Image (cartoon, rainbow, N blue to C red):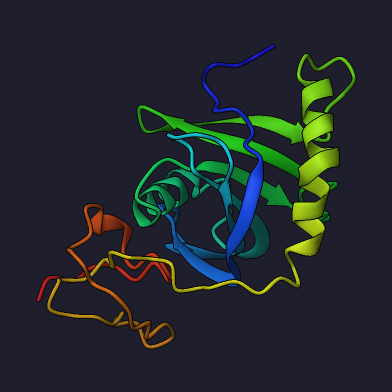
Length: 196
């Protein structure tokens, strides 16, 4: 059964980012959180040309409570749609390890379980096949893979600046244009944009 709210799970190609300590903005009281972010190009045709897995670390706001901001930041940074998967390693407070796909419609997040699923789930067969061919490998091998962590083009700063002002980030890099989503802050650390 195909749920039209969600893009199909893509076939991953090249790992282009592997950041075990990615700081993301959040609308929650914490203001930000930290996750392990991995991004692949895919062999799926447009419009979904990237696959991102955001793994919860338990630091700051949760990936689930920050999903709208994470999705907007990645869509902006990758300059197009992205298939976003939330990965929860086994944790006492959240139970066994699981993988969910999140989509944003009209500013509202929606989730579907990718793994594990029960045999009664109408998507169990396709999801199990995808996990066996791609998913398990992505979750295990990416931890040791090396990838370029400087993929972000536009930076959420005025165009005359090229570094994040936050002391713990101090990212330098391209500032091709002001961020279309300035409220999201720096796509590396979540530092808010402050007009000069």
